[in-house]
Length: 250
Ligand SMILES: Cc1cc2nc3c(=O)[nH]c(=O)nc-3n(C[C@H](O)[C@H](O)[C@H](O)COP(=O)(O)OP(=O)(O)OC[C@H]3O[C@@H](n4cnc5c(N)ncnc54)[C@H](O)[C@@H]3O)c2cc1C
Image 1 (cartoon, rainbow, N blue to C red):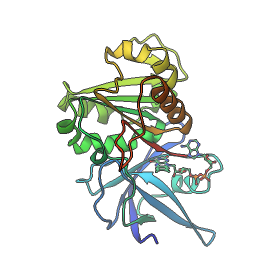
Image 2: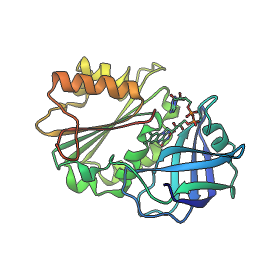
Image 3: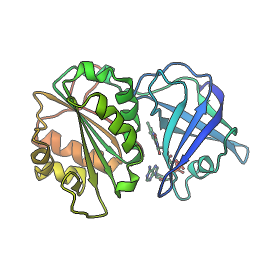
């Protein structure tokens, strides 16, 4: 049974294309960077609850969530309409194994994300412990348009602190510009055709890499399939270590 706490909305950021972030205050238990919790609202006398990843560092008590407003969704259109000081239910306990605690130390940690799937990585990167555990961290963020990389400034700030260890690669799926620092296409294709590795000068190699995948289920399925069938990667389980850890958002 979920134990609920009543939180209060402290701030809301509205980004382009129905993306938004809510920041709330609540009494909840500690969580691990990368975990998710449940948010809920009472809508027409029913409690509607969904999973959302914490994006703040566990040390920061302003709990932040990065959310996509889904047209005709049961909860997100109501979350989108929340105002500062409104109440929201939040699960007291965090959930999930999408954390670096379950990943063995290795040279390269790859963080692949689509859209709001960057959330858990923002928590892990702000927490900072990952920079002791992995020599290099490669954050790959795929969005439709560059203006959908809403946490670019935060990522740049983290990059300033860990410039030798953190590599960031933006992948755009919709608009085509001639900017050589950005790749265009879809994550699984850019891995399959070797363009991503060539562009970064780093190989996704089972001997020294762990791959994290978060967001769109299609990206996760296709990327896993390629890495498992062609590069000998396997799913990371609690009782059987592998080198792919993933969190599917829908
Ligand atoms: C572990 C976990 C963590 C999650 N963390 C986040 C998060 O940090 N931010 C976030 O925005 N979402 C996150 N989600 C998704 C979230 O739980 C909801 O599914 C989503 O917000 C839609 O809720 P809804 O009630 O508005 O839509 P629903 O009524 O539940 O769904 C409507 C339809 O939309 C589809 N759908 C759901 N999410 C998306 C999406 N992002 N893009 C396109 N189609 C979608 C579903 O297939 C569904 O058929 C997470 C899911 C899981 C399982």
